[in-house]
Image 1 (cartoon, rainbow, N blue to C red):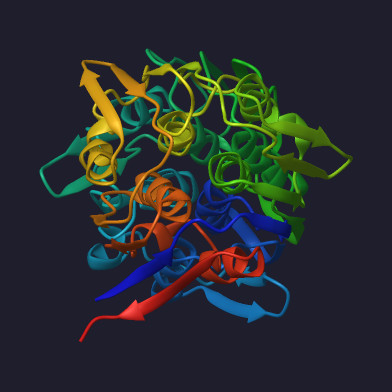
Image 2: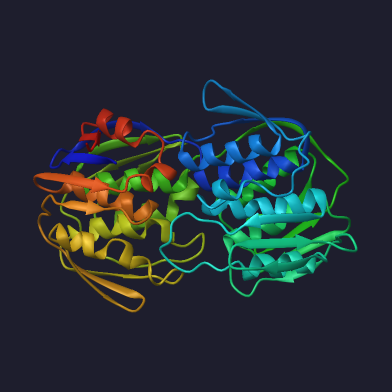
Length: 421
């Protein structure tokens, strides 16, 4: 099994270019099922989740052409399949967007329950509530979700019980071709939701309000192919920013939308890092030992749950006692807390709150990634630690970070991907 070998203690210096947003790509790719004609999508991240989704579409009958410069052309015109390969579907979480896409296009779908990172229970009850508002009948078993609109689908109104990114995306996709108007209340506001809506609108959809808590979708008869470029990845950018703050150095993070980074930039500044914004770049410098901080994860525009572990490394090396309160996935701390302790961090978890007492240094250890973002946090910890660190289960990390080793190496880190015998 491959793993990362890291020799810590080297500052990060130079420039890193951020790839396309994973969370936008894994929504937009299934949404191409709604489109007649080829969609040429630029800035597609080269990550395993994207590879699996493209393979799923190919097996369903789509024509997928991989082009240079992170560009993919997808033509789903000939697709007739409404039951994607269950083995591939179970390998990633975002495969549940195939439900909305197939239901919206064909009026029926049978999709295996998704896989992906298992850091917390993530039910799809809000997705089902949305589909039922469109007139679908949904049956969920231990292994599959079956959805069908026996009388045809129609526009409807759904008020989400909780702010759910996945449900908001799935309902938008399902409703784009449904006659009438669909209204989603208490919708999530994340940048990748806006990106999905912009993609669909570029192809001919009529979606308004994305980025607010009320989204309106006026169904259209057809979507036509076109060109689109995915936004930069907010969480990848935040990961490199946190890495500089924890490890030390001076890095220009390019191809970002600074507004999307406000919640992360503000917290790093509060902790003592120097953060300078430009039109499409952010420079991060560590000028002193970090100060303690308090973080509560919240839906966008609050501090993202996907940055919890990365900011946790910064806290582990900061002066004083810091706290993280997790308001979205309360069991997420357990994906990395034991691994942090193995590297010399002092972290105590009680319910939804982790208390982290800073230390001046971490030490290398052999640790395991238990999900995508916890794995990225362990890489940062390894870069900051004294001695050698091995990070195992890196298939989780490669779900969401393009060329992580190459990008960090270019910044002066000593990290390599090694194969165990």
